[in-house]
Image (cartoon, rainbow, N blue to C red):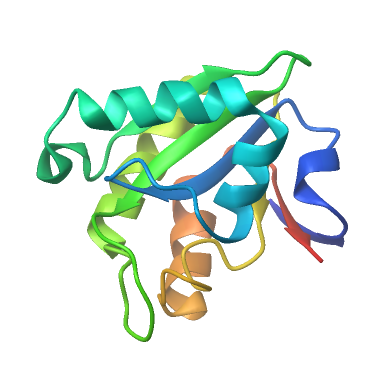
Length: 147
């Protein structure tokens, strides 16, 4: 089940908070920047993980980092590069990372994500990404947070 609510993703009641990241250790915009600012240790661990791996090898992976307040930040490697004005989200990579997330999160736990994950700065088509979420998380509740 997919729910849409108005609210701040970083104030989500859900334990698992998933968002898309690039493969170069940059959290410079959007939800990633908010996570970097609120959870510096999550950013540090993500950045180190990127430094320890080749960018092309990270696509489709997921890095889970527990935060200090009991939240679990799920970094989905859905885009290799980042920039402006084109699609950076790799739909196959985002799908693979989401599938990994669905495999490890108990179905009794809801997953929070930003509304239009991968579509803002990543440039993906929301219709495609929304269908991925519905297909991959059939047994989970996904709560999409829209500001």
